Length: 123
Image 1 (cartoon, one colour):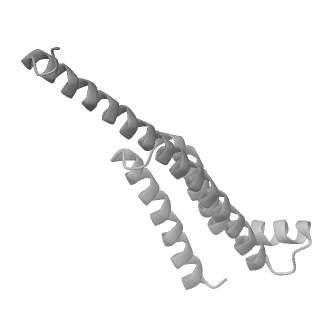
Image 2 (cartoon, rainbow, N blue to C red):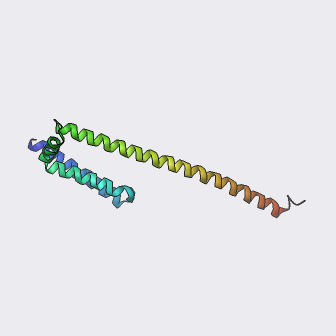
């Protein structure tokens, strides 16, 4: 890796980590995801600072091209994130449906109480 490529990669890694920290600081990134994304940012920085680590890891796992290993790890990570987010969306959809049902029942009860109070439903 030549100096300009290394410098761009290093600046990019630092910017990604700084962006994650800024999202956390502004509370725009949930705490339950904070550790995961901080680890991703730190790993990105470590592999950028020590590029030979990627080469050694690829050789140890029997991967011919270190870039292929990084792409594979990235794709597996993204599939995991998408799966988790799909689970979260499903859970939130169920919770929203239940809340909407509960709200409809409460509105019906309030309307019934208002009618009873006005004497409209007195037999």
